[in-house]
Length: 320
Image 1 (cartoon, rainbow, N blue to C red):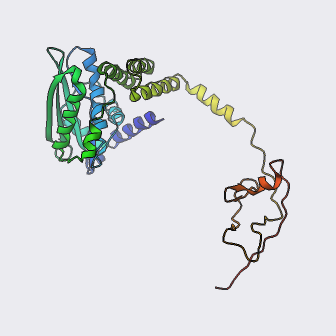
Image 2: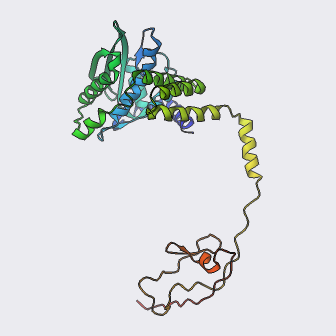
Image 3: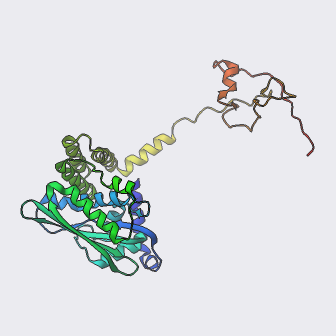
């Protein structure tokens, strides 16, 4: 349902693109685009999603920013037909930013280097001015992928003028996994999920879990992909049939008739103690009323049917 809602919101934003472009963005709102990759290494290509997800996670650890979900940006790119274009030009970022009401958009590229190394270039685009609000660049061995991403994240914070507290810096240093191969499998799962191949996504996420059983994001991804796969296999006719079947279920039995005698809520009705309870309105549960944490009807009947309780209630009305 969340995925369908994101797709609907993206369609609505595209339909009202002109009016959204004239509106000021929401302050301190940041979106991250998938990173572009122009090489041939399938593992590095999958990092276009995985690296963006890492950056989204780390940027969200600052209370000074509101970071949009990666899936929201992906839904927008799908709607405007740029999901797989690999474009990283400023106008694409500005257009997406307007429709997402984001003040800044982070976009970048990944390049594999000789010796199993990786280079990352990122730029912060100011949506209001369509200008670059700072850059972040770095390179390192693929085995040090997480250290490289932390370097880029800290540089992006600096480009946006965000001062991190010691607690936020400590939170940013956390890794989702220590296993780079597990993260590459997780990244492939994100690519498959974005393309709608939920079975393949579940398999990739499960591969990541097998490589690192403590990789929580991969476990959650596998569960989500499984749910999406099951939902996508259900036809509209089956859904309508299920709804029809539910509507044909017998209605619940009517509640018992109201009890004529009220419950005596205190031992001394004329001088109730401070611990006595005030009788409230009918709770709508078939005459069952609560006193504190006790079900008085259940107490009166000892849980064996509805025996009308007896007692008296005295209502005292005093002039103000």
